Image 1 (cartoon, rainbow, N blue to C red):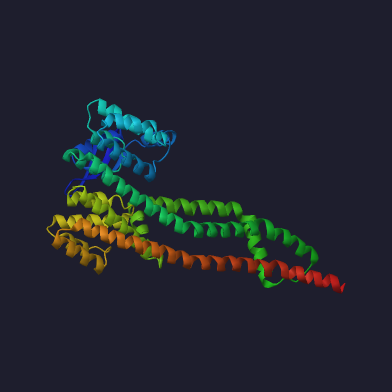
Image 2: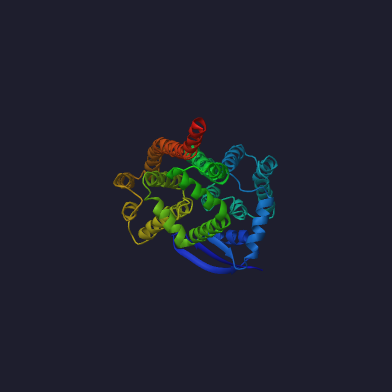
Amino acid sequence: MPTFNFEGRNPEGKLMIGKRLSQSADTLSAQLLKERITPIRITPINAETDYLDAIKGFFSGGKVSLEELGLFSRQMHALVKTGVPITAALRQLAENARSARMANALYGIVEKLEGGQDLVTAMSAYPKIFTPIMISMVRVGQSSGRLDEAFLRLNQYLELEASGMKRVKAALRYPAVVFVSVICAIIFINILVIPTFSKIFTQANLELPTATRIMIAISQFFVEQWPYLLVALAIIVGSLIYYFRTPRGKYNWYRYQFKIPGFGDVLRRTVLLRFSQAFAITIESGIPLLEGLTLVAHTINNTYAEQEILDMCESIRHGNNLTQSAAGSKLFTPLELQMLSVSEETGELSQMLNEVANYYRREVDYDLKRLNDMIEPMLIVLLAIVVLILAFSVYLPIWDMVKMAHHG
């Protein structure tokens, strides 16, 4: 039986680290959740298991999208509310699942339910599909007898997450395409276009302008040194990927992102939007405050913000209230702190968090539009500069050749 290292948080937010024997990472995750420990990281001591899991994941249909999970939770809400047995509902959804991986997971849950396990334990066996916050919401709904409401809130959470991701991707798609196109054009010009004209200019014995000589020198460097450039690029990219996969590298990378002019403010508001809407859902679902904060921290997908939220949990455990703990964090502005303070005094924390989320949703939409409006002309100017340099470097000598031919 393989051995796994694990990290998790108990309901009070305390970090639990250990090593256990288990049949698989999924089984260990289910065992930890039974002990009310939210898994953060489970890694096999034998690295071969990772490759086997990756191969299984690849052939079982790839990653399950937020849209598919949202559809699953909405359908489960409708089926459970109308009194359809859970096993029958899951089997029906598995037959109509969009991806093979989701279908396999649902069939596996049905088998575990028929084997005597409860729904939470069965879902916990698939941590790469059902996240800890989803498991906790279902667990609260199951224990309170309001499973249909739990799936409804889960659907609301997943749809908010999916819509936010779509907005960000849509706003950044055009600048990314233009930037990649400019880079590809520069490479194409240096490798294929400039060498052709260079041969023509050399045969004509022309005195070339400075810009043309610089372009030819750069092109020759690309053509002659491309193997070394590829090796250097591979080393640099590999080193950066290795560093950013380390805990310290991830933390520094996400922390520096907040300091990028223009983009940093958008990222901070996006993080606060995800925090507010996820935290509101956990409170409305009946998840305890500290457990909810811990779960939200691991759904942000930002190591720096995750650590700040976990520090808030630590501060609350030491006797501070939510507002005081948030004030010690570097994520929140005075506006959010004031709103948190008012909501704690009135006892309407979830309602206030929903209002904060709506506010940041509008702010993020505006910021993304403004950022897109700012980047677009910069990319157009960059493209124009590339075209202008190419025109002056290539066509000026050609114009000189034409004049020489006329004089001749």
